[in-house]
Image 1: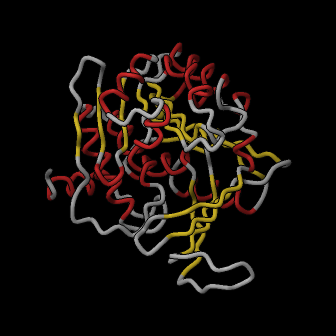
Image 2: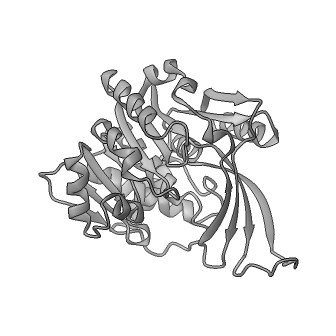
Length: 315
């Protein structure tokens, strides 16, 4: 049985660094490196969870091009099931150019490509039937799948007895709740970043009040990624919040994929039977490993190494 089916975005990431300022139009600026990496929320989560020992699959769409073949090959090399990856000859594979600054923060230029045409009809139900956890990730960048299709799909997953989880991206269209509210009752674990959570909560900045808003919309458990401050966990509306700080003494090289890595760690913990708090601590440790190397998956190590790191760096 699959531990985790990751549904959503697959992206080829071209990362260049360091970029601390943009050259004026028509001018050239030198950088130390330009490299191609696999990226995208679903792909990163699946690859990282596989590295951690989970049996993972990706359900998404690519174009019939160099970037698409590169991504599928990376999944196969990472022991991720690719039967759910559909190929569309009419669109190009989604790609991003990431400009990584000296302090590890990044700015993106993004071509939506195949992710924009991914729909509920592209989903391989055999993979869903075989999965313990279904993770929809990249919401607000899945133009066709966002909204009604996401809600219908998650409802279907709940009817099949699956654990459902969902993470979002920043919604540049500013539709936020218009697209997501109908899916909320079918989300077991909701995993936004604090910035995304504030937008979805109508500007509310108190994590406790934000979580209450999500619970009132039907979400079962709330996990809010707090960036450099760690994570906020609420297992139910009645339960007390758990706030877990990030691990210290971690040199930040590149924050690309940090949130996705956190999610992969958390959901791998769920699949392996960790407590809710243990999932959060493990996810923080996975995120710490992610930011210690360039690229979204490069720094992730096997579970035993992550657990050893946690033991040596007890919070």
